[in-house]
Length: 139
Image 1: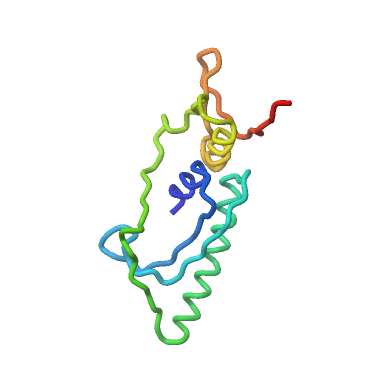
Image 2: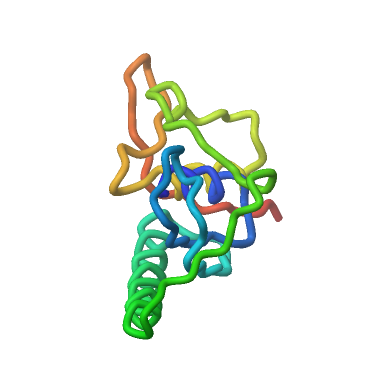
């Protein structure tokens, strides 16, 4: 899903990915058909992540079609202890925490940019949205 991608980028995870799985009664609990792990080099914007993941899903689709063409799509049971889940971000979750390290703030801003609303802050009691930032080192 895409919300875990936002959280992964905010946390600075070294990888994002895509998974094709069978439908099941429980959300995201079906057997895994195929997965693609994608390395992340920061700075990395959410739009870049979606583009990379879109390409990965295209590859997974082709892989699934190949399995189907051979007569059977095989799935591998998930280890549910390794599963991660993420709640959708509420409006308050877009607010920049200025007490964080500069690189954490940049990742936060990059992860919440378009197609999302952008990270938010307040200036003169007015809400502003921030879509881009660069970490500058002191000399």
